[in-house]
Image 1 (cartoon, rainbow, N blue to C red):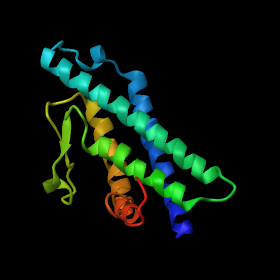
Image 2 (tube, one colour):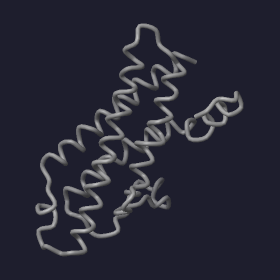
Image 3 (spheres, helix red, strand yellow):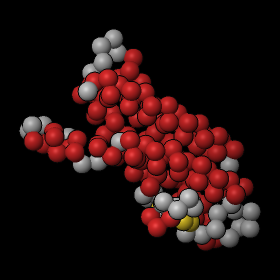
Length: 165
């Protein structure tokens, strides 16, 4: 079990790094004024929400990335600590991507298995926003599939053993 958890930590950490790099690149090169070139008040609110959600997602992903790194750098691997870090990755990073607070976009499950983009925007975004969001989608979809156990089963196992989560 510990070997599986360790390899899952390694792959999760690598995917988070890829997402972090994309978000940092975007946030370091984009501004509200640059995104909303038409000075449309509705789009201003849309982009403010999008940028806030992206910053939150970046922070959550960086924190999870660091926690996984700590688990992997320890002289002896602690599976329990690693499972906790994977649980937090699912509930913080993955959920922040798929359920952004400002709801600038959402996942349309009808498109998930058709080969089409499952992400639907509330308003038509700039190319940079669309590219980032759609580019992050396969990373977070993959993480969601790999860490699905940590959505419910991990919590239930902890509760069965009388542990707090």
